[in-house]
Length: 358
Image 1: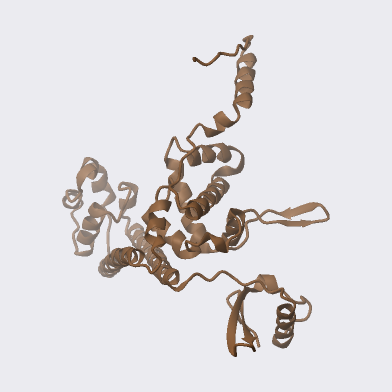
Image 2: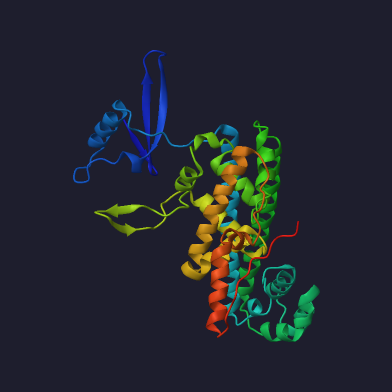
């Protein structure tokens, strides 16, 4: 008997010697049967045949302490999506009442934005009075805020706005709670390497505590489960696909992997892009010119995952190669490129090697 569940097959394996039943979890993609004929009976026979010949590959299942942390990180991810949806609804409701707060404040649901939105929900109509609720640097934009807050809310819209703000605050409190619970889960993990692993991953540019927890929760800390860093990247769906026939490559689209790992790595790549003077920032700058920003982010995310693999495998902090790594690696190419640029400006260049000081 075989049970199909969300892209994987649960196949019971009977061990007659010990009298116990083991469960083998395998990906449905690796156990495809006949395309033209498909029934549950045929699928079960095909799986039994593959199992008999040892052709079913078991899928990665992390140990229980890692799975418990995974439950927390995935719950946090669902809260973030819910909070984003609420923020979008608040923005849409405000726009329908001609309130343009988001065009003046970079964060319409920050401290200042919430005070003004709460005042609107409470029935305040004086835009000048509400503009004085601005905090810190936003005080300098009081004239623009006064214009942005000159709208008209109906009583029903004010009530809905208040409800949305209450829900937003509730989700925000839940996020703080799950973040604290995740830290406790990491610190009290049955695997003593888990707390150290989070700290080691935090040394990689772009990775903070939250992303480090997600990586540990999704791939674990035992890198022996993945033979190489490339196998890990393939499992996570962070490498180009390989669809080739008759010498013709049809598609290089990335494979479907763990969407949680992928989202965390792209987020880390975006943060690493902002940290100038690092290897990852230099790699992004080098790639974005020929493949665009989005593809470059995925490529940098792939590099971060490879780095994370070696950091966890060797259990050592990340040592950055520096922002000038590519220039130092290709000194001759860099020299020729600069000479060509000078010659294109009508300058004759004579190159002479300078001996290093003893």
